[in-house]
Image (cartoon, rainbow, N blue to C red; front, side):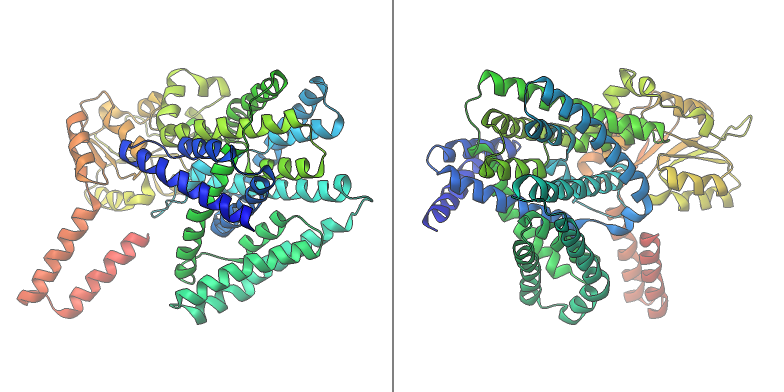
Length: 548
């Protein structure tokens, strides 16, 4: 117990000092977590580090399971599952082959293949969790693919426990793991909402409920001789964070995430060792698979299934980090004595490298996708948009509407009343099919693709109205080299000033508009110009509009 407490004290102490420096300089925190780990690793016993890493990973798996949006997974689940399975299978087979070519035995070659195949980005996931309104297509796809690969990770963990670590094969462990997941799904849909509805508003009890779930499922896993990560994964599935049932629980879970995330990243840094030449070779191959092969393979599959290049690449870039499941599997294998030390060190080093790179790609994914389009990557991968465009011959003096789901329907209605022709540009395939059924003119594709604007007849349009909340998409509209007026949405006054300076004709700041509308209504109510009933009706209309 003393070793664990000492390790936690040192980890958080070093992390706090380094993060103060990072905050003052406006630098990303992941490299500083790793540096704190390197310093802590010099004095903390490796056994304590391995224990902390396992528990940190288990709780992060639990937290990801809690935030999985099953409704979104249903809408894109088959496609996402197919993409995740295909990517992991192809890279896994290639990884096993590469491991055998390196001279590893069969079991260690499998470890290498798993490390190359199972990718995710805890860094990207932290950005995906910053949800405000309707999420972009790539976020929904990425979350579903992450969930699919986590399921594959659970299967690998159970498989290793049943056939490699066990003295005698225990096939029934798969049935037990499936039973735990089925129990979790049953709790999520039959019990959890009823429970949280009764406890709504009592944050302390909700916190105890969340902790009880994860501890209870981990205890069940231990009782069934399963890995703790299986229990943590099932516990996350059992808890639903859907509004409005569990706001207090979500706040508590976010606090747990703030506690366990530093433990995970710092322990990765602490497990780093001076690499040998053999370790360097494994690391180079692993990093190439995770940073290059996996994102490009996912992008290729998505483009071939009809997605635009930006959506495909941004989805792929969320799979540019060695998975937490891979680290857990490697740690379990090291404790059990099944993995060779150079390969273990390579997996840890590869995780550290990809974490740092994922910090950059997570922040600049939009700019990276635009750069890749300039280099012609998406055309090489087979992106095609012309056959999905439907534009009336001789279309002129039309309004181009970007992103229907974020207020574009209102623009279309106004143009219809004014008898003004419109054209919609959209990059969500599921929404695009609906748009084609209601709009005479539509183009599917990425806003940074010049071909999209040629098909949309930009130079013949009277205006472009972009209400997308995504900054990189708004920038693509602002930076168009055209005299056509462009109206874009911004999220603050600083962005408004920047976009106007860069060439936007006008900007829409929803918060300011909403405040002004409410202020005018309130003034009318107080002055007696509008009745109380009309004031309430307008308030309801604002809510209904925002929900749509």
